[in-house]
Image (cartoon, rainbow, N blue to C red; front, side, top):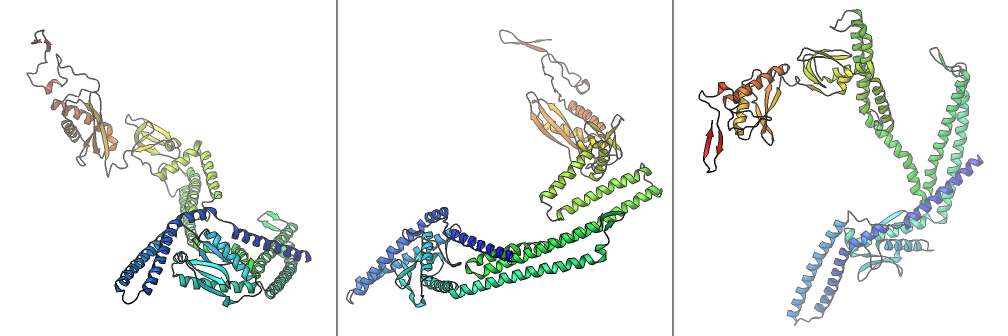
Length: 626
């Protein structure tokens, strides 16, 4: 017991010394960057203060001259009063500007607190002469400590005295602090009201300081400290005695003394190990309770002495703040917990329903075309795992700490498992199930998977079968389907229509508007192409010898694209030939001299003749050569 007492007293002394040193260092540590910024930003305010001081001196001189004038000097009196009125208006404007500048600086400039006996009396923002705000605050604290430690203190000795640039607070003949008009502006109040308020705070703080540091109070605090330590030691003794009795009583119970812990046929702990575990748990609980008592005693001890009360509040905050956060977190987590419970119930019945389907298939009461009885149990196990995994995914955002590193590690681990599990047959099965839930395609859809284009004819757990336009059946493993991009031509065709497109290149000699119309007419003449929405043409490039035109048309028959494209190309040829527009692309060079047109003979007039070769003689006359 004596060792515990010595330990508590030593720890108390160390904490008290550390707290005092921290307060002293915090009190004397200057913030040089803040002071420099403060000095720079207050220069503009100081300039206005100097102008107001100059105007104040002029106003005083004018008032003195007005008072010395006689009754016969009315004109001179009127002039002085007018000038005095202008100075008052100017001072009002300067004060308003000064207040506005101070308000704009308030958000970025922090005042220096005048802290005396753990109590903040007021804040100093402005410098006075060569003294910065920090120097002024330090000087005030030092003077207050000096009069606080004096043998006697009289409230009547504190008085305010008006100086030329400030209002001074004096104790007897000693200057304690000076308050300027600029300080009052920072406090958003009048100078006289502000000075009186500070005088009251200083008086109360000094009186409290002297009271807390009196020998009688110190003696009471020491006696109270000893009492608290005795109470703590007594509590520790009682806790040890209580836990000894509790341990004997628990171990005497037959359930905990003669039997071990068994889980079905497995003996987790025998009787001896069970007693050892119980003893260990009680010992841990006992030490935890003792530590809590000691920890709670420190705030009481530190709260006794004025210079350690801040530490007492901090120690209580170390306990109360986490407890408060935990309580708030638990209360806020209740809606998420209810959501998790509802999800667990829903997924439990979903799994039971899937199990019912599996049993019905195994008994033969439920038959699914293409699904065999021996697939029922493996499929159920896979679907069950997927449902549980999906349940975890849904519940995951509602779990506390779901964004912590532990949860992220679990997610990575699960991802690695699925990565290795996706190889081989199991990978194909998983991919087949994923494709089912993805709804990337269904039976009968025209799709393009990798380099294979055709209609989906069958989907199994292992492969997806596609029939090409040449009636070739291509079996694609589901893992390959998952690893490739799947283009579905049918999924939007029924509602919005599938756009078929083709590109033709026409020379610059043909008007583009005519080409657009010919392509649209060709599309409208093609079976299975919709008139609404109307086909449209895009000019995709301007090349060296021709313009590229892309025709876009809508169809609701995606499974007949080959027939549509064939008819579309044929109609494009017919429409262009009827309009006598040659399709000279891609590498056909038009030499009209002596060459016939490429338009078929059926679309040409009966008297059409190929143009002759044209030559030129030296005299400049053209000669046609047949």
